[in-house]
Image 1 (cartoon, rainbow, N blue to C red):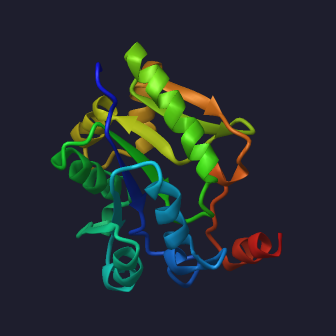
Image 2: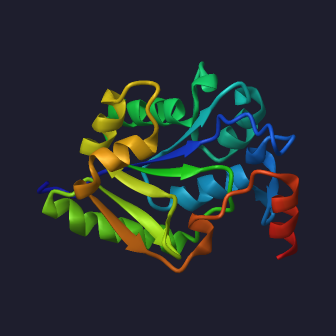
Image 3: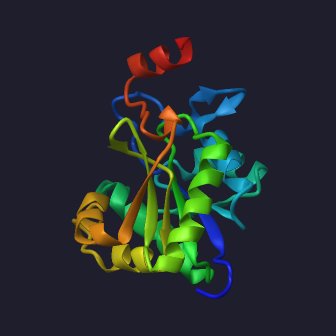
Length: 201
């Protein structure tokens, strides 16, 4: 790629949050919510942010609109998170962007310096014909990931019953894992107890 790639942000926020008992996107965090934090995390690094919602679209719309992000709806969230990823990546490609920084809404946002570090890594490895960078902390892979056009297209070609791990394994040689010190890249929050532990910490 001779020119600098263009970036969009994608936040997957269509989950039912059944174990939490309330929408994880709207959990309070650092003066805002997990959702507002994720949008702010990405805005400095991308041209626009897409939030993929499910049946919670109306509840998320005020936050999305107030932060000048873009709301798209997964009309079949029961098909799982991978279906939301496909919806978001299709929107990125429809808008002609080269890469997506994909974040999950069920965790505290990563530090913006972490995102900048991952973006610089992506800019280096994309010149070597690699497809994506994935953060790694304490031996675990996390988010946000940065996916180039080739990986986005591979995700969109995958059957609906697939998941991101299937695609990752199928294209392992094209992915670069980047160690980061930011524990938030692997920290997810599924239960009220986990959220309480996080807010106490």
